Image (cartoon, rainbow, N blue to C red):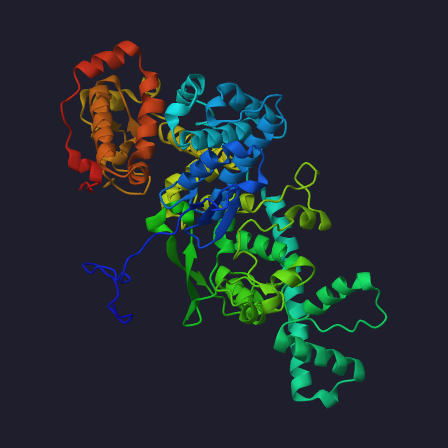
Length: 608
């Protein structure tokens, strides 16, 4: 088939290679004998070889290699490198526990439920109960994938069939940061980002001056400019080793590389600031692409990766705003993305990565691993689990929590904080917020249970109830039988006879409304008027009105309903009905009308 065939699309089959295709094996057994190797290639493009020769208990290797292949292979449930590494670590830890026993099992049939419980107890020595339960659950999933399940012991089969072996264990999520903590973290990250930007700008400026007018520089600047020119060409730091001890060479190379390239220690503040500005997951930030499009200088469009959404919804296109004001370059996600793109452009050209992130990492072991690119590498290309040393970075900046202790810095907590702050800005109305998740996911995984969210929500609810109660009390100040005795006898007689009736109350002075002049408002607004008087004879109609309002709630959006009828509902239920006895309300319920003129609920205007 020609390589120029049509592209796949709706109604068109995808092009396939000609000839016979055989999928590469996930598990490989060496022909000369020895332990198996499991080859993993994830959906994120990252690969890993798991070699069982590194583990003890060789007689168990083949069965567990088959189980691992089933879990991390194309049909398995662990399809990213990080998830596959978790499965491998479960096997490694389990084998280590078994090796330490006086009589470790030599065959798959000899593994018992007691061995799993010993593994559980060993996990409890180094981690929390919830984490230990999760690790046991991962082990049980591997055991269920072992070939030849009929060979397993009856006690282990029964144990695996029991519920609640960590299946429901959920990690206790750390809360978001308080406003003070978040502001301190972002301020420290911003200072470092500015320092990185200015450092590279100074190096670029010296390089440009050397290229255009080297004679205008002094001797020291010319020498440094020549080194920068060579470094920009080949990517390798050019260091003057004269006068340096051998042990000082790596640091000298590092300092020289920092003049033109982003280095490893820069990743912490850059990632922290990106998380606080965008509110995205750390995995999504680590996979930011270099490819993007700037739209009329006002926004940058790029495709983000979020694998937790599943295969069919892994990629999503976003538009991040770009500030036109250079002074606000660090104030928007789009402007910051473009800054990162520019800062790492030289390194990206040398490393060849398609990722936004590219650094010089050519010291020590990195000099050998990345020799072909002069030490430049996409730091998250091979794996996402590169250590950022966030704790050390926070300690250097003296960041503390609200209690004065060392701040535990996590990118996931930064995202959680942004979700909470965004929800607060929208007054807690999640459907109207531009979130990185659905409203349900945002609530379940970020807002619910967070102490700062709970405290804020309690304050908002208290204020809302207080405001509603105050408004209701003011509106119903003259409502109820207690006030009827204070009225002039003629007015009271007219009210009791029904001559002053509106829809659900009596109007004591229709010629002098609160707005001035004769009242022309809807009858539904009477209960919020100081001229309203409710007597026992009005109770049946009030109860019918409550039924009508309830029926309207079933048909209308809750927020729209609250805006229209919330005050009326509060006045009736909290400040009118409690003034009557149970017997009065029961008698009214038996005589309430079957229906009301529902057009009044929409607020028609009454004419004099």
